[in-house]
Image (cartoon, rainbow, N blue to C red):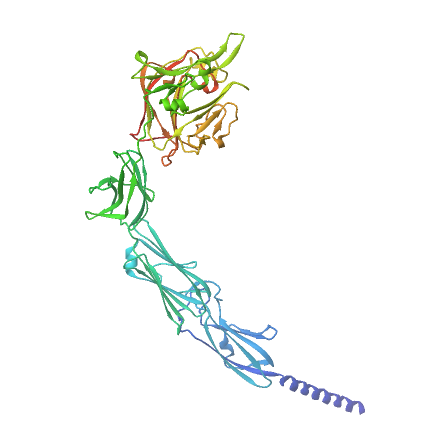
Length: 606
């Protein structure tokens, strides 16, 4: 009996404890009554993002430890029943379901809201939330007149392209927006405008693109702070008629280039016009298209004369200047000084100079030769001739010969080619090996197309001086060969100690090749490896073998660049082409006369 009473008492006590526990637990909770709405005043269109309507709102309830304690993808499920929550502080987060607004998307407004709430024991807390636009709405509008004015009109906002038929709005994350437009006309000329803005959530940016009545275009803004609406209007002007002109003017012709051309229309015929400055009538020149530029060459110009020129578009019989009128001046046609070789003088050592008496006395003449070095042995390999041996007036005689003493036992001296060159003979080396130091070239800034003259040449067939490989080469060709060549260079060159006389290059038989200093040991490199050579021309191989009578020659200058202008001219004539290496025949005799520069015709290009 006592045992039965004990069991009944224990059960009663357990039931009592349980009821007290439930009562205590119920006393530590409260309730949340939630209402969620949307402010859709910015947009009401459905979005194309898969599974996304923009209208379904999900809710998260996050406790003070940042743990989500309850959530739903449709707040409507909680609409009729209060939500039981432990007493405490919570954050209620509501947002659109199916798209988080972190990237740009068409017709995809993203709504969100957040609110703090405190749940008290046994009480119901009513929370009413309104979700507002959390990304940025962008709308682009095109004016019809703008679309008609250009072949292509394309607008972009960040990475999104808005075609001119696009009517949807695009939504972007808050932050930097770069709006731009590019227009292309019928001649594929392009113009671009852009604007960068810092956009915030709820903002609505409207970018209007219109054709400007005049001017180069502009960007204006209209702000409505009550609706977060920002309206930017881009006005794009028609591409103005403009271009950049450049002229590469020689003495009797010029190359025109029109670049950066804008504002022309497909029905325009384009051309250049030019005239002497001060004259009224223009001369037309056909414009040839080269990629995006137009070029032409005009001939028959007068040297040292200023001209005006322009780029012109013709439509409906009317000429219209594109850009501005520009000017250029043709180069002078500089002649070779004493190119007829009629003026000669001898210095105190009886060395012949082609030049005036003053030039002879100072040792600085336009033309020079090796006579200064050979005159010490009473030799003049280069000298004037008249009468039957001359072509007209006086001519230059260039005779190759051994200069020195050669008895078969004693051989003191060197082979000297009869030569003539523009430059200056500096000094003779008699110790440490016979040799010389010579500077080549004279200051010169014109651009001839050819060197003309007459020559007569009898070559020696016995190559009695020199060394290989040049000696063997000449023997295999049947004898010695002469040389006449012309070079234009634009290097800084070398300046004499007097600070006045300047030359392009130097040959120093006691030095090593130092092309960076314009110095060479035996012969100057005029190949394409020499970046300072603008143009080069020489006698043909056949011409170098001889001419029994005075024979005209024309050496075309082959230009490596048609835009660079020279600083020096080098003209060389030699009875032995390998005289630089003291190789040739003492039987070689050359006569030259009437050297002149030609400025007519098309320049040859190497």
